[in-house]
Length: 361
Figure 1 (cartoon, rainbow, N blue to C red):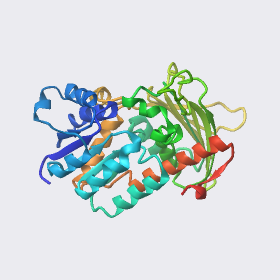
Figure 2: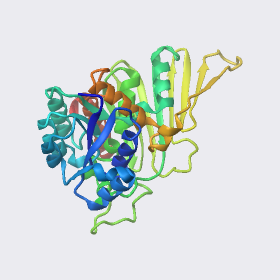
Figure 3: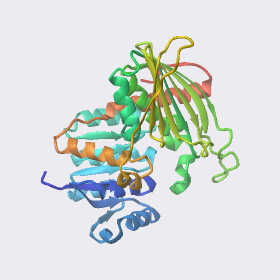
């Protein structure tokens, strides 16, 4: 492939710009082409590229970019509901692909992507940035190393800001996003599977749209996306996991918190604070002995995106896989299963019942 891997980017909105900024600081990566049908979005990309914009090819869509033959790898950061349409010509072009989450907005489309990726012969990587936030990565490493003993309970909390405005307001409607539990929470369902190392069998979600977007109307239509929820997941090995989501809590000190509890200890991580706290069991009324550590993040990586440096570290791992120097760490099948868990949660919230994973996957 040569020393430099030539990248294309499909979708130059907010997440696309984050990828531009991170590719610029990834050794061995060179962005050579961008594609987006919306001139406003292309303008954001040109601004991010600065003087380098003059050397970048611009296309109206993924098909035109794929036909150019000028790229080795493509990052897909277009709206969720366009992923299958965007990916079809890219699979035909036999390029390596990093596709933003969620893989698709339906389980059927996600399954199509997973099957196409399995037969493509090229690297396909589902972009699950939350795995790569350094404090989260260290938390995962320590759980797997046995710091809590045998894991029995996992809880994840994200208390954050509402969904941001997007071009055409596409993210205000379930039909475009797959629903909040797919669009946003696929990150957390992916983390659950990764940490627990078992498969989910049952999902129960209680959620609603209670605060955000209630007074918004788009061509007379009211948004229908969940803005807060509790979700419980039963895993095949008996471990239980819980997600606490609130999207009207931007004032919280930490946006993400994760807690793993095993038969030997409890481990917490706080992001963006970066603190990990291990609390070993002490016995009733014994002196507690919490152990605190801090995980730092490179300032260059922090400045390049909005995911606590994760996009930078993810790109390093993707590029290693493209070069044949490392594994694909987040497969299309991982993406499919995260979508399926999110869809089970959406069904559960609407129908107010537990949903067996066998119903959706």
